[in-house]
Image 1 (tube, rainbow, N blue to C red):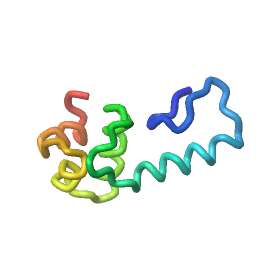
Image 2 (tube, rainbow, N blue to C red; image 1 turned 90 degrees about the vertical axis):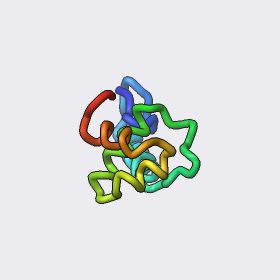
Image 3 (tube, rainbow, N blue to C red; image 1 turned 120 degrees about the horizontal axis):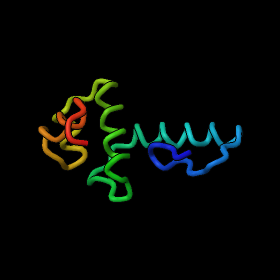
Image 4 (tube, helix red, strand yellow; image 1 turned 135 degrees about the vertical axis):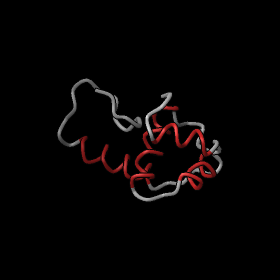
Length: 82
């Protein structure tokens, strides 16, 4: 099992590791990288962008935060060109 944003990479997940993984994911969601965090994979970045957009952050603001175009944010949010 691989956690979508790298919090937990294990085949056998123990019950005590899950709260830590959730806390890590939430910390990533509410951390606004400026400039973009080079440690994030593209998939992790896209998951964070979708979550923040769902929480009400404007696409233009997400583009600024992640250093990508507003058009690319639109593609990520609306599921085009993963």
